[in-house]
Image (cartoon, rainbow, N blue to C red; front, side):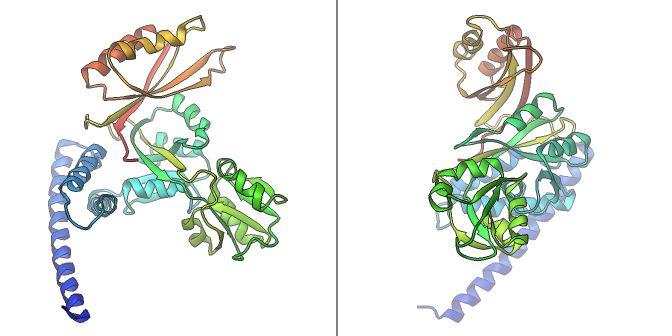
Length: 360
């Protein structure tokens, strides 16, 4: 049996090999970047990076878990990408939000972070070119769609080119490590809703104070010793807060799906990967059977619908926009045919984006 020192020496030797190989990869990535410059191709190709990670996960037969391989290679590709161009990524801030975590999960940490005070600002920064990409929440498994994101998608010139799904674990954070003396709990309205049963049982008399983000709640809890925040451990670390209670969300498997947006001139729709989602918004005249007719082209061409949401059109009474996610890529023959039929029957039709489906 090897001694501890022998094992450490062996690890050091492997680390030196890894460093050499990572630099070899960076050299190759740089050559790819130079070729892309001459061709005018984008530095970031989400479908290519997703395919690389999926292939490595399939090839792996040893100790590392698939999710660990995903995290490792995403950081490797992020570091190599940054050698060519540092992506500017906007998200709902301040630092410590789940939106920031989603941005880092999708792009890796080698990016220029742009923290925004509202979802409107994320869309504006991305549409104006102040950011290359934006990361916005689309829906939560407990509370449903993020209505403001859908409303902004409707008129924004950006489109969705990627998605990431984040497990949401809410923690009660404050200056002390106990529940004693808490008078106010500050959090985003979605987080307050996702933890309402726990709050009713453990802090029934505490005021629930809605703020723009969970990280903003953490910032306020840092300033008030009788306040607590519902936020992530990242936010707790950012603001130097104790964890008074862990994982207080009412649903154990609470996830939020985030979309990655950009201008079409920044990145065109990713090529088909074989596991794609196409998101669109449509409206039809308000008449009997209109919604049923809307779904007919999908059934006719064998296209699976994975999401269907309605939002008031606001321009006329009792008229709605319908947000639909379907499985497949517009390059697929059956999807192309279904979209053509839909376009012909809709008063308004817009493809919001097509992108590789995120791992659950």
